[in-house]
Length: 137
Image (cartoon, rainbow, N blue to C red):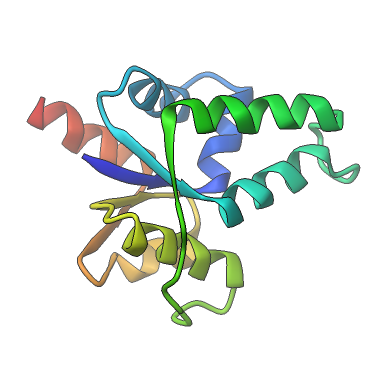
């Protein structure tokens, strides 16, 4: 199963316990294939080091997080031009899913969730995805 995990879910998984961490652990243990793009990893890195966010990681710490994600994720080149969302990064999430042949986008973003699916990619919350995943495995 190939999934794109949105930045908001990754941040939750990195810093807290709960369902996002459980999802990321499934990816780390290769029970699911975590698909991402350089654009999405760049966004995550920027958020991790921003001073107006609570994380305040040093550059080298943020780099370590990104390298760890690359270690078990599949980084795809995004070529698709998606303009369905007002937020450019939401469009990048969809592009990564399309170009990475993902079956799901897992997100907490209400704008993405409102789409429900796009070009065959299902868009789910962490809870909904995990429930479905656990039923099928």
